[in-house]
Amino acid sequence: MGLENLSSWHVLVLVLVGIFVLGPDRLPRAISDGLRLLRQVRRMAQDATGELSRDLGTDIALEDLHPKALLRKHLLSEDDEAALRAPIDGLLNDLRETAGALDHGTSAARPSSANSAHGERAPHPYSEAT
Image (cartoon, rainbow, N blue to C red; front, side, top):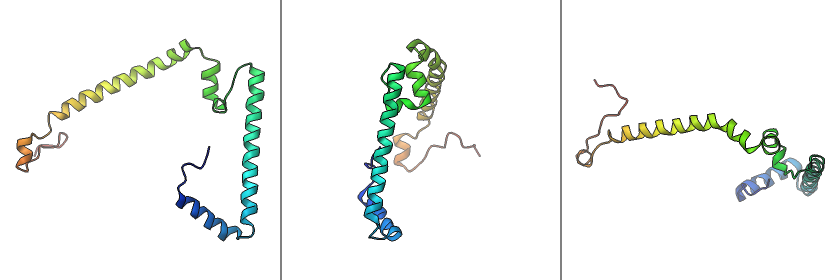
């Protein structure tokens, strides 16, 4: 969780908005209070994950606190997870096969180089013949 996705223009706009809203005299105090709050929240999250790790007897990362990730990592075995994923993987494979078949079917309808050299276009595969 950082500011790496903010460009210099975004930071400049944030500083200007801060100056206009808070004023140049209160802006440094507001920034320091915000940073202090962020450090406290991070420390509380680290303490909570440490307590959970001790209570559960396993190593828990901050990302594992999401309920789905916690269940998947600590309660399901690899076989259980594979059994849960099997229907979705089957549907995904069927979808890929269908998309591949459709892609091969439409590539045959593309214009040849001879037709495109004369400015002719092949009809759209979904257009009605008139």
